[in-house]
Each structure stands twice: as structure tokens, then as C-alpha cells.
Image (tube, rainbow, N blue to C red; front, top):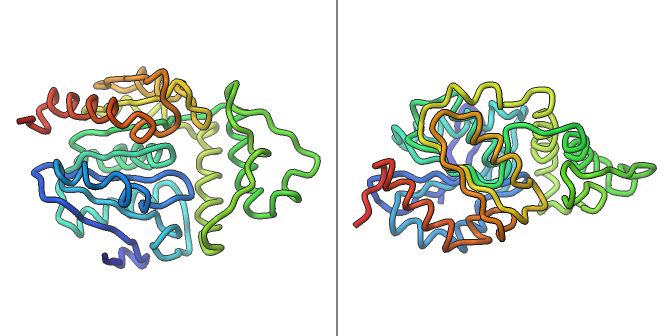
Length: 266
């Protein structure tokens, strides 16, 4: 599948299926779309035109001179323009949900609906420090970064930065990974929450009651601050409900799109 040069950055994408509704998958922090393409794609492409992509500096995309949350969102906008997609259902899991929120705020005309899974629009002091330290672990090496430090998690029961020895597939991913960690940490001082009331498209917010990475609290915050939201907390699901409870997630997704008259079910 192709690489396309978008404003000087090579972005990897795949384009599958041919349904009337376009479904865009946005991956988690430091990751790429390979897992979705290998494990999830068949079900989605039978119902949608599905576009997957790797963030700049990660996966199969090229590196860049700059990394920031607005630039990740801009890359997606340029990709959709390149693929002649006027509007789409944007799905984001974890960090991908942060990118989707920024994208919707900057390019609302491109969004027929948002699906936000296991994500948030802000973080608290402990969470911000935790994510900043994850970037430092990657930059300095685990032992050097954690020397003399012991971080508490953002919420009770969450994994701590000190428990995670970061292993990246390729050292070239490091700069983008650190930028994403710092952008997540920055949601404390620069939260997206105050901007969310501007969003008017239908938004399905999904959280997992047993999510030890992001927690369900972020999903509740988003739901309270957008105009047109449906919130579902799957009490027994973990981080990434779309995989930890596939059957339940897919049922809720299709019901939501049908109710919003975005996808007509046969």
C-alpha cells in the first residue's frame, strides 16, 4: 500500500472496502495501524470504506522535522483531501482519540461523526507528570529516567510510568513517541475540554470500566462537555473497548450510526 507525500512528510495509509460511509481508524500513542489491519479490518471493510494511516514518524510513515498535536491532525486532513473524502466517521482509540478531537475542532466540516474510545480531553497533575516521564524514559533510557523517581498514576489502579520499560520497534520512532507523550502531558495546562462545546457532530464516547491506562473518567468528561454525545461505559472492558469487547462495541457502533442516520442497516 502507498506512501503519499503530504506537505513534505511521507504518510503511509491503506484504503479498503467500498461502502457509502468512510470510517477512519486513528491508532494509539507510539503505535501504528498494523494491528487493526491484521485483526479487525475484515469486519469493518464489509460495512465501510476504511482508511487506516500511521502518524508521522511512526510505523510505516516517514519522519518529520516537527511534531505536534495540530500537525498530526493536519496530516489527516491532507490525507482525506488527497483521497477525495469530503467527510468521514472518525474513530480514535486512546491517543488516537486526542488526535480525532483536535481534528474535529480544526476541521469540523470533515466529520460526519466521532467515535472516541478510551481517551480523554484533559489530564490531572499526576497524569501529566506520568506521561511526561514516559517520554523521558524513552529519551534517556529507563534506569536513567527513573533514578530517584517514583510516580503515582493519574487514577487509582493505573499503570505507572516506572512500571513501563518502553520498547520501540525502531529508534526512528523515538522523536514522534516523545512528542505524543508530551502532548498528552500538556493536556493538563492546555486541555481540549473548554473547546469541546464547539463540536456539533454526533459523538459516540466509549470507555472501559477496567481500563488501567486511561480510565473511564476521561470518557465521562468528554460526554459532559459536547453538545451531541452518547456515552457508553463497558464496565468489564479494558483499554480499547473495540478489541476488549468486540461484540458489544460493534453493536453499539452500528446502533449509533443507524440512529444518527449515517449508516442505514439492512
